[in-house]
Length: 488
Image (cartoon, rainbow, N blue to C red; front, top):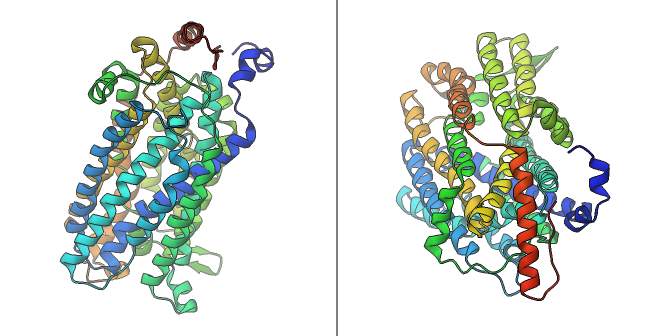
């Protein structure tokens, strides 16, 4: 943008500007939703294996196939949303107010020990998960789909993507504190069992987070188009025109299925951290690590757009982020974690890698929002619902694949679900470090290969915005109504 000052004082900028109060409410809503999702995603596998004592292979299949169902219903939800409007004339916003309380209650049910035999326990878990998932899918598509509807301007949408990513990251970071609450020292001091502690965590993070997510309802839809006349199946087939979305989805899938072993197993089984005369146990060490390594990335988030511009755009930033991640992980592997010097050095290296990794979601969402403009320009149909449902589909398919693989890996390295994590054998303990630090390198390499084919042409974006602005102006004149949106 050659003259940002002129742009911000222009008529078209004012028409598409997102007020800071709405942006803050939207970011707060994403923080709440991510508190709920990240607690469920981080602790359910652990809860099932250690509290419910279900075989890890069975848990892998439960979680894996549940998420396959989860992934399948997301495009159905997205296509249904794209082919209709709510009574208010809005497309997504009403869902943000109505669904969260029900989603939060269902999530809490996933962390209750009903003290039943294994088979009925599995039945209850699967039933609760499937119902939770359908409602969560609608909410998730609506929440993220609001980004391209928040403004008709690419730069303004990037600002929205930046701050909601900050909100989402903050929500996920808050969940990290639960590791300290679940520590043995806290349970000994409080007299609470781990079963009760995890249930309290579910009430705070899952139900509480979903109630906080209702604040996102304050965000307005500023891109208004005619109600789609396309049928359900035609809406899905429109995706073939969105090469950018499909490439980003494939890159994310390959990167996420190699995300590594769960932190809980690695830190609880392998790590103790000495600072002077103080020795920190695994849970506390994990909290220190996750907090410290996340700080530089969190600090960088408010400056995301200037950083991305300096690197050369969204695509170049994505490639650079994974290249740095690979280098830092390989060096970290050889440094190891057995000494204080090793774990401190690894924490610093991973903190450096996290600076740009934290910005990836901003780029993904910004590029996806721009690709929705491209599809509208090419086909006349806006696809917020189906596009962001594909984003969710990829997350859940990768989680499903990762869960199934993780179950077999746990079995292969000798995990015994009858024993505490700290009591596992030598084979299990030796496998933790390479799985934790090197496994994600495979996904990073594959991610870079795929993302290199993404088109991020700024001149094309400017041309499409101009064309859409003119097209919507003609639509407004034809309907004898004032133009509701404007494009740069």
